[in-house]
Image (cartoon, rainbow, N blue to C red; front, side, top):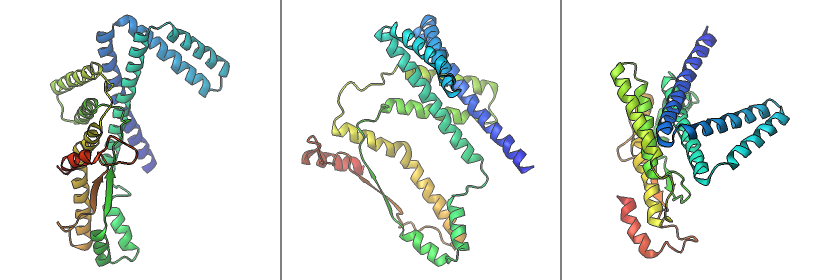
Length: 289
């Protein structure tokens, strides 16, 4: 009975994932129809079918047919102008980004649906206590624990910050779409918001048009703090504190800092001649704020 229930839950879970993928894929197609026209969409679909068919043939071990399809795909793409090839690459790139957003949302949704997280703070503390670790020892060890996360700049970061913000908004809209109490009007407005975000993504230049300076790299890296760490770290520490109070009777002290942060951004002078002492003086208050 349990296996059957788990199978049904898994099927429902992946059905939600498929629904999200179909929703975002269909909306992207609608946006592209308006932005690039039906004639180009026919070329895009023809190339997609050839690529998918060739991949399926290789997976099935039918190499000869796969090679023929790949040659046909290469011929189709060779007939494209540079502008058409760029548009094709952008379309598939945005499609894959949207599928990545749907997959990440699916992982979060599955984690929320689990009644028992096997590696949660509560579960780990419980296992330690059952392994003959005393509550006093557990409390003392957790309070003394220190993890320092050092942030470093990545000039090869592909997505510009403006695109990252749009991807985050789409993820929030998918989360909102999971609510069971949405009315028909709510869902219509949600679809309009998704179309607006996807259209905005398509109309946004994905490429940086100038070489990033150390300050640009540092600002992009510090953006991670604003996007993720600012909320995630306090949330995690509350979970640790609540689990600690449950198992030892005492919460995490306010003076305890299990997680600390450092940064090399704008201060890593190993091989970068643009990072000077003047640059480091400028970056220090920026990172601190």
